[in-house]
Image 1 (cartoon, rainbow, N blue to C red):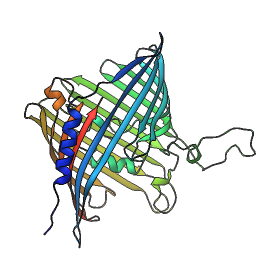
Image 2: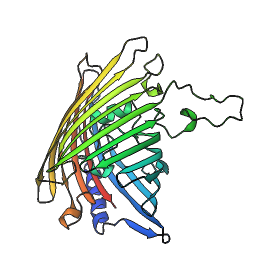
Image 3: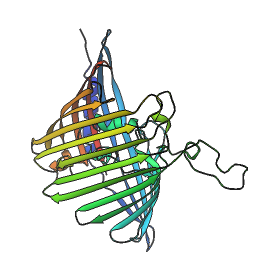
Image 4: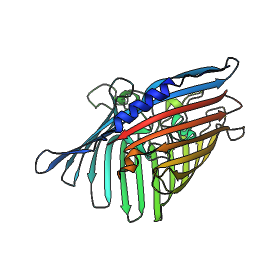
Length: 365
């Protein structure tokens, strides 16, 4: 008989209650008449139990920090500035975002550096503190793993135009999804003997997103992109591959706690170019629903399928759980302080059947 200790969950709950006793607020620090420093961040402690139903029914549980994020943004008047985000959840400080931005007009902003590139809405474009459950949808994680990587970021430049209820973003980027210049198509200069040294990259990547918000909590969006850099993570034994991808979403209540009933639908498609073994098509669909409970909480469920190859049987994912926001109960935003309990189930012909239970706290400021 399988036995799982409840001590990690009880300890995590005690830690969360201590944290929310005095939830912090974001800081704005004046650096002079023209400069301002904005500091924000968040932490997500969690306890989890994972079970894989194979010959030995392997079980693993323990504590962790899913994220410990700090964001610093220096603004020069309303004209632009620089943002630098760091992550400490692994026990060491790592860079997350580093980019400069300029507000070219009231509606047009440009960025250059390392930042979240245009992609399906359920990916990194949804901030970590607004994730519906404790993790992003499995189809978005699968898409990221086969394209830009889990961070969903790349070195490049983009422009974003906002007019009324419509937002359009267009990005040109390296396509490798890394912060390292040596593994991208960056060129040091012309003084050396070889100005095209480094990893050979036949092209760049272009990505675009269009989002329309007609009102009433509704949001509709389209994504499309092409990557001609042949990144290593697309290699299945014959070298990196170009790919084209697209996505669409319809949300009614995009953010946790935003309205009494929420519904979110996402679809993703991905086509890899022929590498000598034929083209490969992947696709994913996700349906999410949530209802308000306990005044300042939500009960939610999500069903997903992802086809690693559309000609074969896909992987199915089920998520269900509850979240509660002590901050919303005190009149503050729902995401400032949140406690979420989620159950995940995976079934697949290629992978072991798996169960995952996670209790996660969240403080965002």
